[in-house]
Length: 384
Image (cartoon, rainbow, N blue to C red; front, side, top):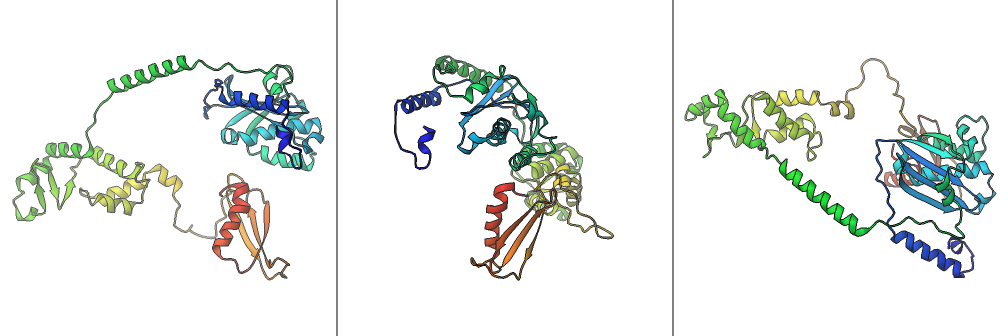
């Protein structure tokens, strides 16, 4: 059916197309047993190529994660055997980029020369382009004899006679097993359920045990303590704010909740103080918040230091990966082209020194430059 989608191809639905369409429907409606990937463990990829197509299998600890195959394109039929096998590896890295990028993977192929692709001194332009993509991954290429590479070899070739199919799992048995697992998990969670008191309840309980709070309660009618009030439950308040006793663990729990919860997302010390002082009160509150902020590991590693470096000019830190840090500048005052371009926007990666030269017009505004940057740079290299 793929040949019918080519340009200027004559549309003819013959019995072979009908058979392929029926086989495709069965494959889509069947239930092969595939394992869930674990990104903390390395992946194994088996690749193979033939004169008809490319095939690859993604596995982990001997269990199949995914299958993939495609027909050779017209220009790929002219490739040498070495390049066709390398095309299968590149195809694998592209379609499973979300699995393999950033994780260790072992690639097995029946082309022994691919083991030395990273150390070959002379490469053609196509191989150099592919090598630039391969270097983005933490991978190791291994030689795997063709006789042992059965699954990937089958995916790369046309099936003329027998079609190997995976038997679908019995749906009734799976549903019963899933129901048993869910019921068991719910019962276990119910037995282990422990209701913990809220922060407000912990503060109220700590107030009753604190001697300083008891001293304030005794003199609540004094004019000097007119700002303090007691509610019906005997809880001490200061101008509508809950008074927190001198319990360092309790105060740390309040600070943790106000700083690291998913609703606050590590605010600054001033923002955190302004939010907390509307609800709580304790002595040296602002100082303790500033001290807590200075000890937060996430804030120290992630947040930008706004202070200028002391002394002489400091060199820029080396980026850890390509297209994480860029330079850009404009070449202006050039003769106007037929399309109206009179400037060149130069964008250089600091890590690899690779550059893009983009023709622009001097009258472009910031929004237009942002659109060009997304379409020409972000689409290729991601956000720096």
